[in-house]
Amino acid sequence: MASGDLRLSANQKCWPAQSAMEQALGEAVAAAGYSLVRAHPYKPREKHGFIGSQREGMEVFAGLDPAAPLIVAEAVWQYSHHVLHGLISHAGPLLTVANWSGTWPGLVGMLNLNGSLTKAGVRYSTLWSEDFADPDFRRQLKQWLQRGRIRHRTDHVTPLSQVRVGGAEQKLGESLAAQLQRDKAIMGVFDEGCMGMYNAIIPDELLHPTGVFKERLSQSALYYETMQVADEEARAVRQWMEDRGMTFHTGPQHATDLTDAQILVQCKMYIAAMRIADDFGCDLIGIQYQQGLKDLMPASDLVEGTLNNAQRPPVRSRDGKRVLYRGEPLPHFNEVDECAGLDALMTYRIHKAMGQPVETTLHDLRWGDWDASGTTDQYVWVFLISGSAPPAHFIGGWKGASSQRQPAMYFPNGGGTLKGISKPGEIVWSRIYIENHRLHMDLGRAGVIRLPEAETRRRWEATTPPWPIMHAVTYGVSRDQMMARHKSNHIQVAYAKSAEDADRAVLAKAAMARGLGMEVALCGTKKDGETWA
Image (cartoon, rainbow, N blue to C red; front, top):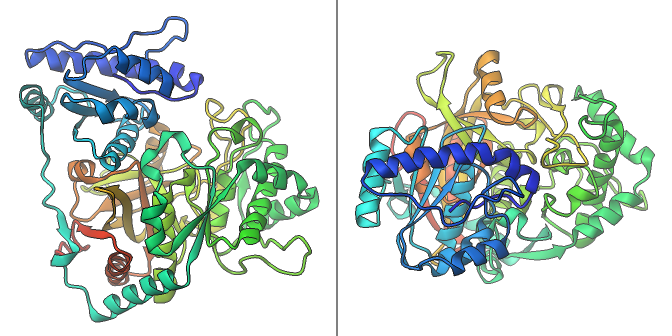
């Protein structure tokens, strides 16, 4: 079974990669003494073999043996709700499998599906491989074929109950948790459920005990408000960015280039988002964007990253009497990932109280590879996202930021990204997810490293060049350990001033999460390899 995108153009472009993956997977299954049968056919009229909608997925499952061993094979980004309905009720053994490629992000799609299955309480096994021929993959695949179950080691995970938390960090985390539960916060959500990400929706009954409540906003309101913003206000936003060194890579063709007209609308959207957030008293907001708005306006990515930066173009209230959210970021969670949103709010408050950098963002856990330049012998992750990355995270800040057109395959109306290379430094990474109808948080430490220009270019070209990139080395967490444990396609990151500050921020944030009722675990080690226990 292959769950696909909702967009026909994406399914058609990605089908050759999926087809090649399925052939390699079929050879691996045959080598184990079994045969692979496709649950749904290639569609000659549509020129791809993906399940392209929830209804189509239901029709596929209606003709499937509910006890059959089932592999969901992904070489691309996929919409989990296309198949989640059937996987929830499927009785046979379930295996999710992904390729390992930056260009064809099956691992990103699979991680989203895994997080969705975890939230739904579905038992599954999971595997990933670069070529489906390596001995470890084939050994584990054969075990699943024979037994219907495989497990990965996750001994890099330490429950918070076994961790030494300093008194100051414990007190700060608990105090901030109590404050949030007492003086409640509003999460502005511009339409839920982006791209089938079931795992990114926090049910109200789990969110409310944290002190956070949703303000459900409509993207049609964002469109309307954007159209009310005067051209001169929007031009002032762009001028502010350019005065600080940002570069816009523009061209004349709307269909293929980033145009001045697209940027103008994006700057209007930035002002509109700020004003709507102020109208409802939001502490953070998330724009769904991908479906719906893409047919009306340019992409929201430039808006999202700008919102997440403390230093950004000022926006005044409609009457001109107030500067909105003066001197602060308005935390934005990309693709309305509410788990990332709650995480961002916690990060902002912890870091502000500790005097640490307050800018935070989520990234896709997009891909990883060994450094081809020889700069480091450590495994280097590519953290990459289209939106939400703030210039404060980039080498050079605004001067190191640029904007390029979003890929036309996904964004017919264009719009620019907020692109940059993340600066070297110490970061805290984390993820909130749902398991057994309870909020969980995993936290860890990582370092962002600088790679030579040629190696950075190689990684960008292997993924999506217009998007911001982070070269991350996770401390005490290998590639396979991360894949075995992580319950999302997204990972939250924030900088600290030093390794020691980052360690303290991890512990304070863990204490805050526990104070909010979450089940908390620390993953990996500190920078020097020291364990958390």
